[in-house]
Length: 136
Image 1 (cartoon, rainbow, N blue to C red):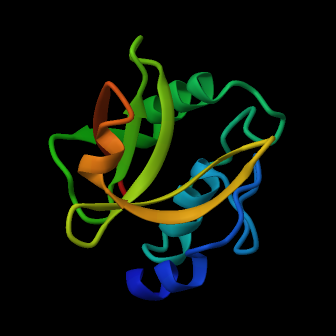
Image 2: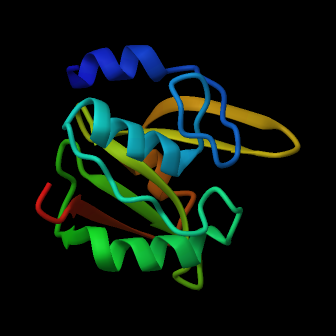
């Protein structure tokens, strides 16, 4: 599947906490599906993800074993957004012209898969970093 086909398939799909299917996703589920469907990379099961463990703990553990940090925006890379205390809060996929495909929402108001510019999303967070799959 091409990146464009994946975007067309997922855009507007509902955000559901801990979901990772083509019918509903959260931010990690979207990244996992993208890597699988577009790049053919199967990410290992993230310990604690389905069990509802805190996102930042899962992210820190998984980035150590699955991802390596790259310096700048790169098409297809995972982008991580951090709060004021440098706690990872949200992730997405770099697509198109400095844009990010991401699924953002919450239990009370829901949410959906959308595309926003990296500059617009960066304004809502203190910092960003970019990662690619080790041996991906």
